[in-house]
Length: 386
Image 1 (cartoon, rainbow, N blue to C red):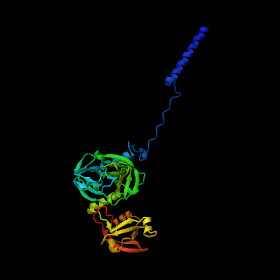
Image 2 (cartoon, rainbow, N blue to C red; image 1 turned 180 degrees about the vertical axis):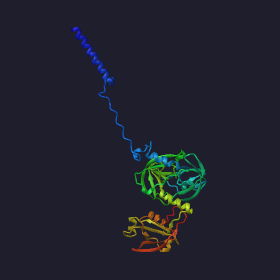
Image 3 (cartoon, rainbow, N blue to C red; image 1 turned 135 degrees about the horizontal axis):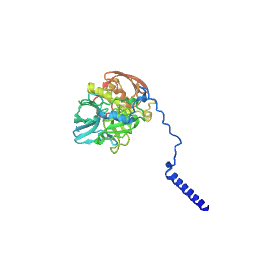
Image 4 (cartoon, helix red, strand yellow; image 1 turned 120 degrees about the horizontal axis):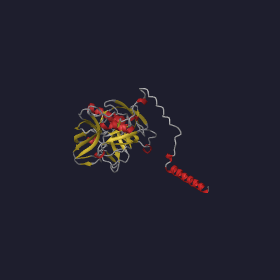
């Protein structure tokens, strides 16, 4: 009896050991379904015409925006004679390369096709002084471009190519942009081929950077580099919102501070160049100075708001209207003037030969002077005249 009990105890011990080993290393061998699983009921088919019935797309968002916009962004090669460009500044690089002395070279930049008949937007500094301009599309086609016109004061140039079945980028609304909106920068940096980078709108209305005469830049942190000049800044729907033009850099590489010309400005310039071959702007011939509180106090001007007239061009509309150095220019027509940048843009928007009333303060009195607007002379950089 004792022997039988010993055998039983050993068998139980072995059985428990086996169960422990299986539960530790192969628990699925011990699992037993409690019931046969019931398959889920099929979902009802969506009604035709509803959003749910649409086939899902494998990619969306910025990938879709890049796919829509990229075919219309081209690479530009401009053969240039030796030049010396006086626009060089320590920290600003245009996206064609550092500004300064250049030998004979093949300049590289980017451009954007905005109409099916072959109209392209790019930067003036990409094609400035070029003897020959070659354009390469993203599909590999190459052709020579003709120069329609340039506007150095906004750094916009318009080219024309003749090829069938051209891709066209949809135009967006730069005025609807907000800080924080997602954007893409598309171009040909360093001639490595078409490249897409992403970022956000960092700031709007950037000016007084010393890059162009008329400045109203979109600032972005999307990585852009030399060669991106004239390329596309695109919103998340694939629409063109800006033309990339400059970066802030001490090394020539992207530091997350890039600038683009708003598409509405570029489009207005392009329309004028296509219709008239030149952009006409108003001009009155004054040299303005910022009226700081310290300067106003030193000149005993009180609380007046406006810009100080530092000089008047002889025989210019301002001189003929009686505006004198030392006057404070406060208003042009119905537009209040608070800075030289506002004066520049307000006067430029006036039509040549139109009549306007100018309000100035002189010796504590406010004067309303009638003035006939002239056409702004062809660009002479850094003149500081409005």
